[in-house]
Length: 213
Image 1: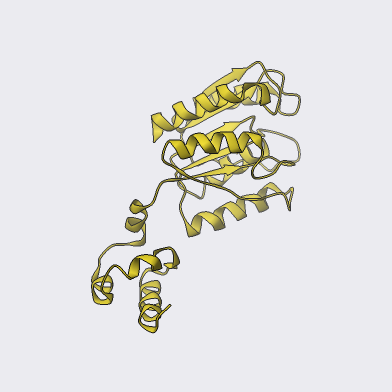
Image 2: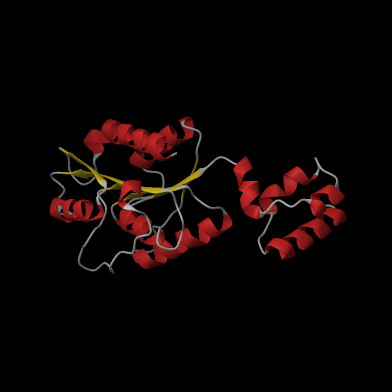
């Protein structure tokens, strides 16, 4: 970075109280003075980037398992950027929420897609991170050992896919939640991992993003 670019970075960072490292490659296409005179806010700069979807894996899975890879490919084809953090270093769902919050402070997300414990993390993080919607797969709702979930999305912005034969997350918990929040619920003939209904899950995600995107 040249000395004049360092000066711009410091001045704009102080003005907006946010880091601008993602925009530095654009600096060379403008004069330094015109960049300083711009009235664009950090939020307005984000309109030039693809909308972001955060995928949030389950308790004992990883960030790029078969299910997330399949769904992330659908999201990319629909024009989204995707992120899937590695939460496997902790089984504490509140710590995972904090990690997601820190990531979204650097770059806001439009949607959360959470599986199992990741569903609880997505719901709870939405109370502090304004997202447009939640797509939840067998979410850990009302499970012993979990803190009470928090929620920031309206029911119309939440869709859930859950298996009738789920032996980890009782289907009754998810039905009760969906009824109370008036959200869309797809019940499929599968178990917790939903591995036999992956194509159907992908169709549901595509429909969800078309409706709210």
